[in-house]
Amino acid sequence: MTPVIELAGVSKAFGPVKVLTGVDFALYPGEVHALMGENGAGKSTMIRIASGDHRADEGEIRLDGEARRFRGPREAQEEGIAVVHQELLLFPSLSVAENIFLGHQPKTRRGFVDWGRMRREARELLDRLDCPQLDVDQRVAKLSVADRQRVEIARALSRKARVLIMDEPTAALAEADVQRLLDVIRRLREDGVAIVYVSHRMNEIFAIADRITVLRDGTSTGTYPVSEVTESSLVSMMVGRDIHQLFPKIEVERGKTRLEVRNLSRTGLVEDISFDLHAGEILGIAGLVGSGRTELAQTIFGVTPATSGEIKVDGSPRKIASVRDAIANGIAYVPEDRGLHGLVRPQPLRENVTMAILDRMTKFSVIDTGREQRMAKEAIDRFAIRARDARQRVGQLSGGNQQKVVLAKWLATDPKVLILDEPTRGIDIGAKTEIHRLMGELARKGIAILMISSELPEVLGMSDRILVMKEGRLSAVIDRKDATPDKVGAAMMRTRPEPAAAGAVR
Image (cartoon, rainbow, N blue to C red):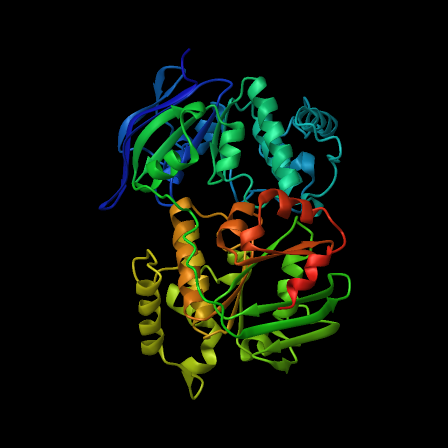
């Protein structure tokens, strides 16, 4: 069978930096081909070359066996190549149908938009994706992230896409929506659509991919049928070294109680939560999306102050009515969405690192830029942040390096308690391991860590104890030695704590 699209010996450089070197890649009709690699491995550049955004310096693109050279994305789209980006490119003020056919609306004989035909064809496309709940006249602004993604896929199909490139499509989806998306992909595969699937999530790769190509430092380490690889072998191919333990847990002797939470409630969000957190301890919080994990963190941090209950830090009751109060009491919070709530991406690295301690960086209302530069340089060295220098815009860094900047920003406040909400979401395997290592080092230095994660292996691998939440309540407290996937999973489904949950307060 002839590949629908093929990259042969493709190389690309930006100035002196070689991004891709002699990469080969072939995609067949009706195939899901996973593309994997660490951030910076060259995946995005390869996607842009295949979709006409960049031109290769060397090598060629072949469509149906014939060499082609795209002059831009429009030409690639006309050949049936579409990209669904992680950041969805939709217009919120327009309807579902208008977004699907934007730029190629069906026309009447007189050249006007044929609104009736556009709605009918939009409906047919959404039905093909098994989306009967979507109203073609609804404004996109009112849709969930999952439904917006379906609209993006329908837009690609409206252009008769035969190659669909999906870049981290599940990064912002709940687990139920992830499964629905995988079902959509299977349906498209059965229809003969060729799909490039870019993701860091191993479970999705093994669930949906037919073959896997791994990039490392701009070169291909090989293409393999999914049945011939394992998670550990993929990790080794991506990072160039064996990683026997993705979760390098450092055993730390538990110190004094840093944080005490007693009967904490926030009306409509969390109810009657009690636990202790000790110096040097990593206390994991598990639960399904919507269980109240993030809401609990934000209540402790003063984003949504408690309506009842008590918070103590180092044994003393503290009134936390705002984020400012939380910071003043030694509590720091690395949020789930680093781009929206953790960083100012257009600003330089140095300004992001010192953002939470500006009161310490100023003299007579003027920022000490020399000190700011020194602190940023120290953060780059301490956290092994890959950046040109402290002046580089944070938005230009990889996801893993952005997460390190957020950590550096909050650690600059010298916290006693560090809340980490989804600390490794959307970053590659190598960066995850580095973040986990940093967590161990912080615990060893006596920082008390409260970690929220949707990845059960991360919760099991890094936690000394696990709090399980459901519907805003504490469902169970499980010690590391007793924690198993089945036990934690069962607790996620309970609505009332079992007797052992009383051990939360200790």
